[in-house]
Length: 559
Image (cartoon, rainbow, N blue to C red):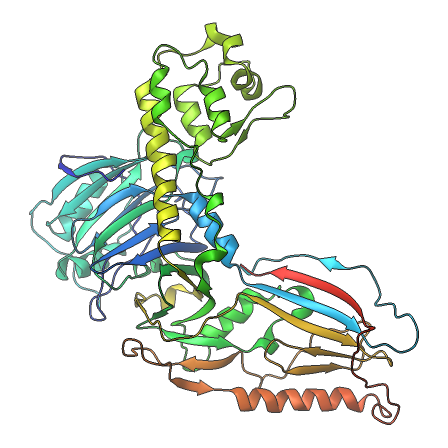
C-alpha cells in the first residue's frame, strides 16, 4: 500500500542510489557501496528497473539485488528526489515474468541438402542456454539541519531528508548508522545545488535479508532517469543495466545514443555465449562512446504472462478470522496456491511467492527441533509448540496484503494496462558514469523481435552455409565441425550508431552506418573459405536445400 510520510527521526544505513524525474539539463543520481569494514550487500553487477511514464508522473519499480554471502546490517540507499514521492512494495514476480518474457534468444535451425543418401550431422539435437545476460562542488558547511519525514514500506524504513547542507546530511547519516564514503560528498553537494531532497531507505531493524523486495516509487515528471552517477563510486567494470518500459509505444534514450549490434559478431554456434562481450564492445564503439543502449525487445507486452505474477485467489483479509491461533492458516494458503507443504508427498515445503516464507517465519516461526515441512504440514499436530506471542492475525493479514496481494494487483494492472513493452540493455564502467540516461516514448519506431533464428545448411560436400536473420550468408569450408569466424579487427562490433537528443517521435538518425564495411568483410571471408574448396562450383555440391532436408534445432538465450 502507499503510505504518507510523517515528521520524525529514523535510523538508516549505508549506500546511495537515486531515481528522480529529470530534464536533459538536470540529471539524477546513482548507487555507491560501503568502503567501511562491512561489505555492502547489494549486487552491483547489474540493475533492473521497470518504468511507466504517465501524463505527469513516472512510476519506477526498482529491483534490489544483494549478495547472499554478506550481511544486510548496513544495507541502505540515499535517493535524490525532486519532489516528495510515494512508495509501495514492489513485485519480484513482475521482474521474473518481464525478464523471462522479453529475454533475447538466439536459435539455429539446422538442415542438410538432400544428396541421395542419409546425412549424419554429427550428433543429436542440442538445446541449451546461456546468459549474457540503471562538475564536483565543494563540501557544504554550516549547521542547517534537514527536516526528516518517516514511513515504513514492507521490509524497509524510509526517511525523506528535506533541506540541510552536505555536512549536516552526512552527519545525520553517520549518526544513524551509515558508513560514509567521502567521495559521495561532492555528488550530494551537486544535488543540493539542484534543489533535491533525499530519501534514505534501509531494512527495518527486525527485517531479514530474505524479506528484501522490490520497491515502487512514484514521482512527478515525464522523463524517467536511471540512477548511475553515485554508482561510479563502487561499481564494477561493464556493469549490466536493463531498463523496461510498459507503455503504448516504443521507448528510446534521450541523452544516450542507440546502437544496432553487428550480428556477425555473435557466436551463433554457441548460443550467443559471447553476448555480453558483444554488447559491451558495441556500446564502447566509435561514436557510441560508452553512452549507448541496445534495444533487446520492443513489441506487444503480451509476451509477459500475468498468471506468473498474480492470482485472483490471493486474499489477505481471510486471515483475520484466525484470531486465537494460526491453525488452519496453512490450509488457507494452500487453497490460495501460495504454498504446498505435505509431509507425505513433498520433500520440502514449496513457497509459490518469494515473500511468503519470511512472512511465515515472522508470524508462525518453526519451533526448534522440527522441520518446516512437518510443522507447516500439520500445525494442529504441534499446537502446543506454536508461538502465540508471534502470532497476530490482523498483522499477518496486513502483511499478506501489503507484500503479496497489492504488489500483484499493481503489477497486473501495469502489464495489462499497457500494450507495449520496450527492453533496453547496456554495460557501463565507473569512468563512464558521468551522465544519467533519460528516456522518452517514440511510438513511430518499428518493433524489435527478441527471438532471432539463423539457418545452417550442410551441403553434400560437407561445406555449410549459415543464413542470419537479416539475410547475410556465412560460408564454412568445414561444415561438419564449423567454428564461428574470428573476423579481422576491421570488422566493427556495431552496425549502426544513432544520434541522441532526437525530437519527440522523430526517426532515428545514423551517426555511423557500417553496413557496407560489414558486407565487404563478409564477402572477403566467404571468398577465403570458398577458395579452400577448389572444385566447389564445378562439382555441383554447393546446392540449395529442398523438402527432403533433415532438420535440427539449436536454441539459446542471452539475458
